[in-house]
Length: 337
Ligand SMILES: [Mg+2]
View (tube, protein in one colour):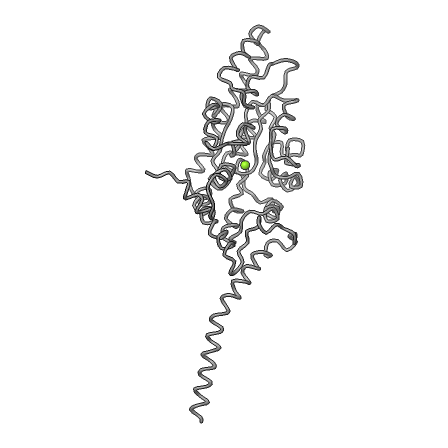
């Protein structure tokens, strides 16, 4: 009898141990999933679209796919954060931007100080090789009416401010992009400036070129964005010079608004759509034709900064590829031999 009781107790203990072993990990997964949904967004909207959040939930295969999708971000984000090449590229681009800005400013001043016949000739020269794109139109616009002061237009995210810690957080938390998490990051006003960015805006300002920021951060994010950029010393980090998104993602209208009073002599961004409306719809060739057409403007009128983490380039790839997870889609697009 005593033996039977001992055996029964051992079996019960073993059974409990088995149950504990088989259930706790699931509970932990659920808790982690719940934690990842709420830890950084206690005041998050309950009506947040689930499709955008892509939060991992235990046992949810589609959410697990979302978690897997973040893997392709690891190398891109590490390259952005830890490669000296990235730092060198930013210095290189902003150095190029300084040279181009000074040359364009000098050309603008010469043009306006030239006698009328030469001014007309200058217009013809500036229109050489220009297509019908927005960028070319800006470069060759007829010089009629009053002389306008020069302006430079810059994007903000991944052009001037480094949001890669937000990307890193998304990877660790296995979350896709969603507006609530993004707003929480922006509200922290903790983004660091990218290499050479602050110096470039101050250089432009020192030359008398008006610095404008055209970004698809929303107007609601104006306050923390100004705070963030002011703390780092960016020139003109104020609401007069910051044209953020109200309802329309295209930046064409906001650039046109600036052009009413200024002549844009340089544009800087990590997304080609920061430079010209010609790149907003890239088509099946990924925008290669449009870039080839305007190749004379890159490094002279347009400065493009590297961003391997996200952008219209990636959105277009994902739209182009046939079904599956993001990773499966991207692999199908790889060129091999
Ligand atoms: Mg950007």
